[in-house]
Amino acid sequence: MIKQHLYLASSSPRRRELLNQIDVRFDLLPFRSVPREDSAVSEDLLPGEAAEDYVVRVARAKAANGRQLVAQRRMPPRMVLAADTTVDLDGSIIGKPHDEADAMAVLSRLSGRRHRVLTAVALADGDRIEHVLSVSEVRFRTLDAAEIRQYVASGEPLDKAGAYGIQGRAAMFVQSIQGSHSGIVGLPLCETALLLRAFGYPL
Image 1 (cartoon, helix red, strand yellow):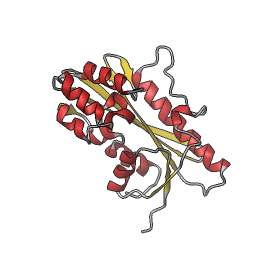
Image 2 (tube, one colour):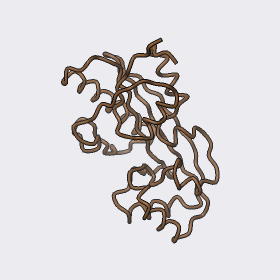
Image 3 (tube, helix red, strand yellow):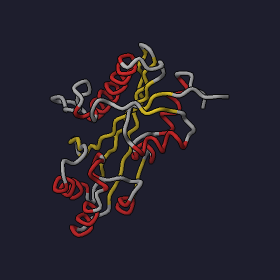
């Protein structure tokens, strides 16, 4: 069976790798700019917005914007897959760090504590948009200042929610996880596969 391609509205190499892992065929759908700078996809936190609501809203906005871009660019109509990941520490949402100093501050806050990683996945096809949400819990061991500095100097945390990548060097910080490892990376494969199947994509 020749599988149809879908559009992936994400620039994340981790999400590309994860989709390849489960043999999903896709083409990249680049935004006009990075999503957080695109006026159609606001990543600003709304007053009183819970982490679950925030990450779902952003993922659905990315999928809807991707669907609109397909129409505007007169591209072949296909399903559009989008996702968003955020970190929640005691009710405080932690996105991607602004710079190295911010990354160091975030990692210091996560040191020796538990936090939640939330990834929402949204799929748009025609007028239909559905989403799934993965929530996992991660516990870091206690980190010393020197290893935080060394990790931040590697550049790895600067484009990742929570200032770390569990699939990279930061794996040595993780004492335990409860939930979806792929969801923590950025695309929960179990939930994504079920969502795709619900839209008729063969897996």
